Amino acid sequence: MPKVSSKTIKTEEIQPYFNTEALKFLRGLKRNNDRAWFEARRDVYERELKPPLLALVERVTDAMTEFAPAHVRPAEKSIMRIYRDIRFSADKSPYKTHVAAWWTRNGLEKTSGGGYYFHFSASEVVIAAGIYMPQKEQLMAIRMQLLQQHEELRRMLNDKKLRKVMDLDLDTQALSRPPKGFPKEHPGLDLIRQQQWGVVARLPAQAALDAGFAGEVVKRFRLAAPIVDFLNRPFARDVEKKKQYIFKLM
Figure 1 (tube, rainbow, N blue to C red):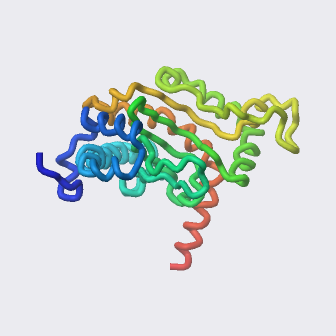
Figure 2: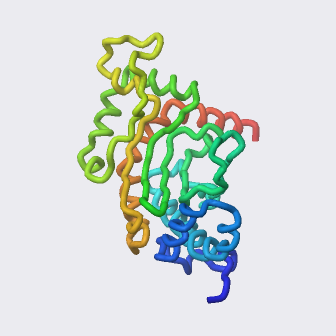
Figure 3: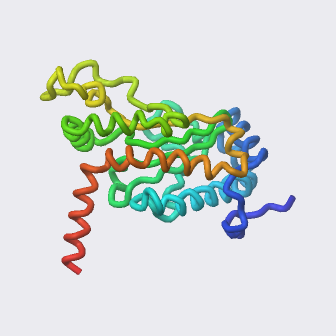
């Protein structure tokens, strides 16, 4: 088969799911995470992984206009690089062993905020939504919101339709004590002690090879949307204020 650059293929001609060659590549990359191996097979990566990943992200993004319009952005901006940042890591493996996308909220690109995440590796598919590693100010803002609105988030996390397809993705290293200044007898303390809030689905890697895969991602994102909106609520107000200020200057 001749080499085909993903740049020469129109994304509307590409199916938004992967094939066995893509899975084979990821399995090989997991065993041989070095530049020589990757470069010798770069054409496989460019042909079998990049185009369907872009098509998948475009399909999911199109659907998000209905339930997460603040997260709609060009697909290329949601796709994450396969290259690892090894500057401060003891692990010098140059590549991630998965392909991934992260749909952040517009206006929160630099600080991330709450969003939607997907990745496809040799062993599994991960579909998640929530906020992970929030900045100190964001962490405090969410905890302050939970003082009054913890029951609202709890209802969302325990939604029956959501829990049929996603599990809670709370921090396994949550604080053992109340954060400084928070009451120890508060009814929402279990949520306040968290340092991340979200939901996650882990599917077999083979799921990414199914023609209905994009629909499976969309279904879970749609059900998790109220949680993401809740977590972004304290920051979204600031984003809207900035937009209004800029509009007045124009």
